[in-house]
Image (cartoon, rainbow, N blue to C red; front, side):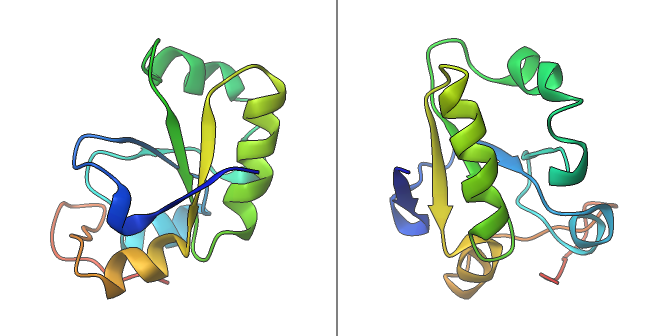
Length: 109
């Protein structure tokens, strides 16, 4: 499965966060699409509607395990998808902004 480093992500990269609701609400990358892994296959169409037609889907979770599963599934469907190595833990550690459900400063669970 192809991966990308957090440091290599452009600010406007399309992010798909597959963590569970409570993790997302506590803190996520602003502008990311949220679709928990537990609902991922059933709601796959939402990803296809939101994803850029000619762009890459960067899949992120807490550390990289769940997002790898989702990225593999997307790749099997013909989507240009990559796993974000280190996930939201590394995102926050590198000083990238994290917001909560209200758009305020969030934390990574």
